[in-house]
Amino acid sequence: MMKDNPSINHIELGSLRDTNFVEWFNKYAEDHSNVVDDRIVRLSYLPCRVAKRYKGYFVNGFKFHTKEYGNSKSTMNSGVWVWRTSNENDMTDYYGMLEEIIELEYFGNENKVVLFKCHWYDTTSNNGIRVHPRLKLVEINQKSKLNTSDKFILAQQAQQVYYTDFPKHPIRHSRSRVRGEWRAVCKIKARSRIDVPHLEEHDDND
Image (cartoon, rainbow, N blue to C red; front, side, top):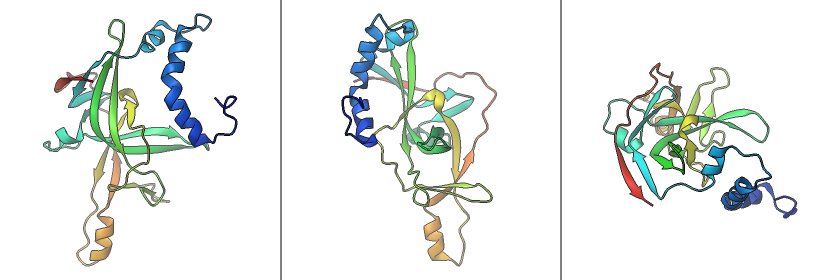
């Protein structure tokens, strides 16, 4: 893409890549001069038009609920975090809330992919996220939103977090109001269970 468009910047390159990826992927997989695994070839045929949605899903030792479904539960299972590699090759995290769980089915036997659609919090330092320099305590601003059109991750990428409120100070009211926008991030340890049935599902004809 850079050869064909030498003057574009990294943001424009990313947008162009997202727009043309499906067409490129299909042509690459069908080109017999390329050595491609059969499962990858089947993925290039695009998914079925009927998708399944779940309210709960168990993966990586975590039981996840969508935010809407979890509102009626006594425990919070909709907090999500994933690793990312930045342009500087250092590791940082994305934090968010699980909004939808979608299962896509592709051509072939049991060729399914589960996606998590999430609301991602802004990762800008001191705007959407703060890290205590000594304690390494991570805080997120619950009113922030990451500026991205890519809200989906593979379910297998997801780790679980719990967002907790800070204690309210009885005197410092103004500071408490500002603090009230922030939540402390608590990473959850994976359970030892291997699998559980999906909690509830329904089909969407998209």
